[in-house]
Figure 1 (cartoon, rainbow, N blue to C red):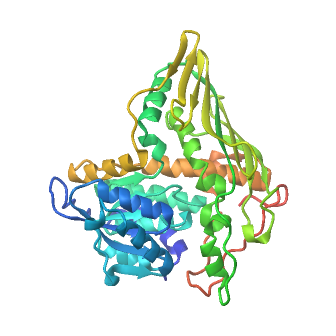
Figure 2 (figure 1 turned 30 degrees about the vertical axis):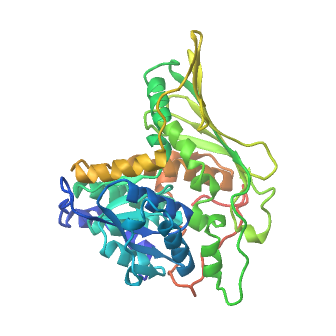
Figure 3 (figure 1 turned 30 degrees about the horizontal axis):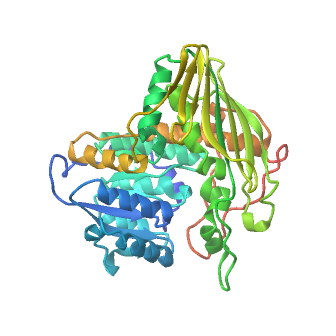
Length: 424
């Protein structure tokens, strides 16, 4: 990745518009779709498996990752799945390693799966769209406002080019969530008064220790989750799912301001980088509705992953548990008991169907804005200030390193101190 991310973010809309509109040569046909995986961790491996099950004439054609061992482990895992092993054609010549691996993958595929640490999503998305490729983009799609603005611009470009961009915000593809959200938006519990989003869980994975000869950049890339410049902090990397559900419930409208708190009580060692382990944020919408957001990653505590809605005529609970989608009113209780689906598979089914049917899907606006919804909470907690939507969107914060090499110095990763850390 020899081109600096800052250069990507400076590309103007006018320059993008001047590029030729890509034709969808696979639309309406049955010709082979070559799939490229960029980012070969657990989620990337799962996405590749689902992509190969989504269409009868697809092949995993190329793979790319910063680290060779992760690529090889991913390939071995996929080759062990009997249902898809015949759809894997990734010889050594199409296995790319390093910061610039994404370029080679994009260059030889029709559809790309973007599953690297979130920091790289704006760069990779722009490169894929400019090359005329359809995209599956894992959540979140940025770690700072500069990245969000880049993604919004790129997705407008994708629309002009008739390319699909499907988001990994998978709850929007769950049958039960779709049914329940639709009923709430149709007035089943009356006008929404307040919302709550919880993501309370234990530790995710233990940090990897420094090995002999490992540079700071290699160490941080191996432990990307624990560094804000790579993950956005854990409320951005994971809690974005239920924050997105709340925005969806509000008709894809977003709050005008937020405030709150966060910190580190358990993950206090240097091995945990600079991210927090808890956040509690209040968002306020223009119509006065408040969203109360709580997320925590502390082992040994009570866990809860859920969304809650208070309406003028009832309440709702939204969870991924069986029979966990509930509407309550004075007339009684309704529990979703309809058909279930694998939401991870469904999002890939939708992507490939859109390519074949010449009906591009573009999730760009909500995937970018829901990412910003989480970023503004981090900004509020890190600084201790009230942050408006406009401030968050126009923030000058850019968490990029000066260059992408293993010898480069990573961005400064100090732990934020509310009241001391300044909003940029």
